[in-house]
Length: 303
Image 1 (cartoon, helix red, strand yellow):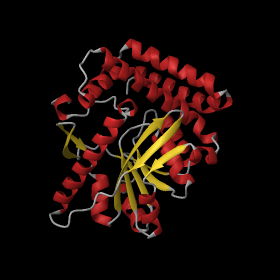
Image 2: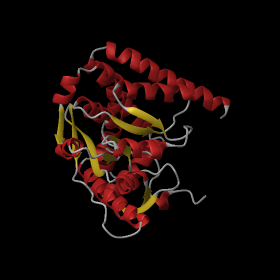
Image 3: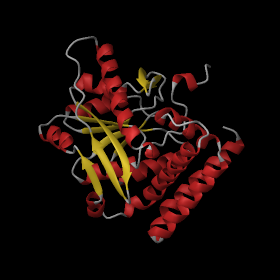
Image 4: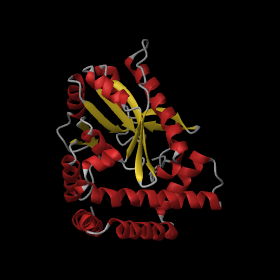
């Protein structure tokens, strides 16, 4: 890592530390307005991440690249992303009863019924809305869970993010740099009737499963599907979005493991099932899909 990158990483980490310290102490509406202002400034500068989000949203919606409607949707997407950060800084001190009251959930019974029957649950979700708030809701209604987090730079920021999520009641395993036993730990939690939540529309391991997603090929993580095949846990796709000043969560019906086929074939069927459900959820709330990276195979650098 270059000195310049290290300095930049330290600035980002300091910003997050200040956010978690200061934002909860300030009135909510003025700080929300500041985050919207910052979002609009970022959108106006049209940096790399903004252009990538716009390109991804063009695929998702079919809107004309460069058109006004797509620009407005991208602006709403950046505002949604900045809202996520504003909320996570306030989340540790938020009243849990209020959080539950303001969370509008469809299909919560799919989690409750399986857990009550002693069966593990794998919740697989795309990067939408405020997934940390959704996690806090899940813990607040009686389902602490295990998840896997991408390792951030610098290490101090990663540790702070882990501490933030553990403070909400999650068990957090590092995607890389751990003891290499993540899959075994997740499987153990599921076999004991626990809940696992995993981001599932962007492969970070280079070992993903190829699926069709909005009409083109991409790869999604094999983990959620493989855990369901190996442990018998219920695989439940979930989509998360904003509802006015509140939050929405849609827990979709279980994707059943195919009765026939090899393990690889079963995983492929389940992975495509996840992609299909994610398509529907993202199409309904495209402004809340925070995908600012290259996703489809034909967008990736051939190297």
